[in-house]
Length: 59
Image 1 (cartoon, rainbow, N blue to C red):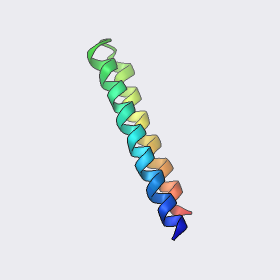
Image 2 (image 1 turned 180 degrees about the horizontal axis):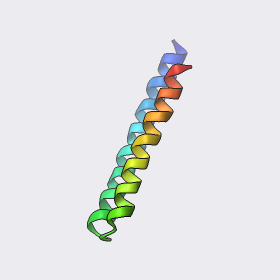
Image 3 (image 1 turned 90 degrees about the horizontal axis):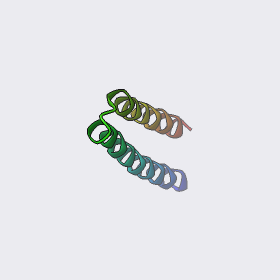
Image 4 (image 1 turned 30 degrees about the vertical axis):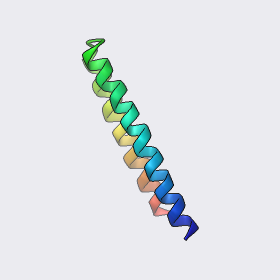
């Protein structure tokens, strides 16, 4: 039971961080006109969240 609650809390926190990071990536794209930086931030953050959640739910 405790493990499931911890997994859900971890998922919610990681999704919150993902949304904040995507917001920063969009800021880089629109305001700074930095296409490579914005796309890199968004793609890297999505991959990190997916990988960390997969590893968390496996154990």
